[in-house]
Length: 372
Image 1 (cartoon, rainbow, N blue to C red):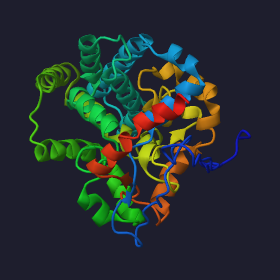
Image 2: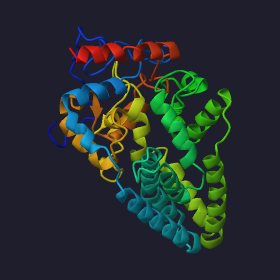
Image 3: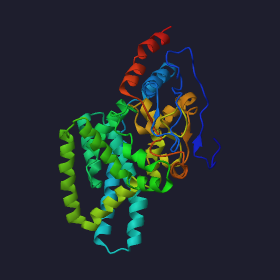
Image 4: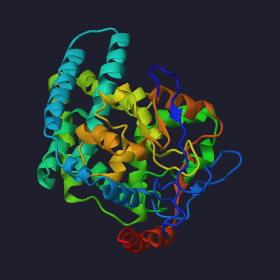
């Protein structure tokens, strides 16, 4: 794509292999049509399993060198430390200094919101054990990174995010799917979509709690530790930085996970801008501060590759990733999602558990096909 083209979405080029056991090979794009508010009442529905495991095997068969990218990235810990120093320093300054409310708010949006978005990426890396490779140490790094978030996120996110990878798009099992009231109330209304994005930090937590209640889950040991740890840290921050300092961190969290350019990845990742494709990557300049979180197809295909090497993966397997639909502007992701009546919270694809398992059962036939 030529530089500086003001376009956020690149449509894919169709490639299919009808002789393959899974008709979606090699891109693993389905035949379903995306759900349109006003025309459709529910999510789009797929007739196969999620695409990433099979695309992973297809890419490894063609590019076995990809496995050399597996590993960890300890520099992520240093970035977490820098963010903690910046955010706690600003919390102290803004909490103990009389500044105009506009300076306070702008700092929380531009610096705090960006830092909070990066914190989310680090917690995401830690939940996949991509910082040190040790589950216990990476959990502790998640807690360490959670210091500048006034709410206990890291350990619950770890559980629900892994469930999202395992059960992507499966009804009643994927905690990333919008709830019934979200899709039924908001539809394609632009004003409602803006308000929905503004409460996205709350909805991210609520969805997990609803899923936990529906499936009879109770908080695990590390989630309880996270709650206690956060209460202690919030108490210390409020005492040292003042209530205004703690509120700065809370406002940073709100801005960073709502109507902020970096938060557009929540929409970019799985909201369907095209028929048949349920996961999208973003290839733009904001991947630099946000640690390549936009490389979402790459991440779902290869969860063992740390953020620093995802662009290398894309380059190695460009025949796949550059053929899939992708975004080049997070600003336009938000703009198009909000302003286009054809998009809303229902712009997702789902499958039931039986369909998912039937799709997965083709793996044996695929292995036999590959060994011919």
